[in-house]
Length: 175
Image: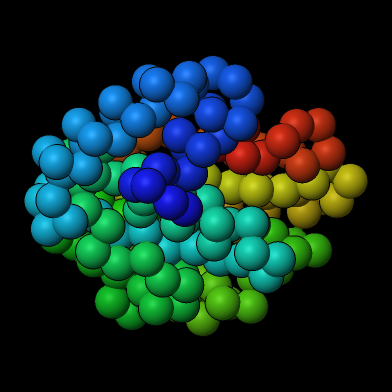
């Protein structure tokens, strides 16, 4: 991305929803007002084999300063294995692959499934799930599992689970 444009702004510009004049004015204003170190810390994790969920996680990080946050972590979900942050909001973007977690989320999911108490107490979280309805029996299995398990283990849900279906819609627009 160039000229300080976020992925969201690029999408709007390409869709004709953001004029060049508006974009340049907004870019000048926000680049002077938003510092890379400003904002509340935010952790973003993704489970992705194809790269879509990773791209969405990067989009969250790029847009975070406009909402008063700073993405202090953008990493595969396995990086949160046994050490999910409790001192900042956590956003998880993940998919299912034939009902299984993505390869870079398998350790985290196995660890989370083994927990029995309130180990996720003080974890504020949001989950976005990607999937394809052609896999009916496993559709959004991992995003639903992660969302519900975090809640069962004492986590504080920031927003309800959000999902997208690649068979019906453009996942980036849904996001």
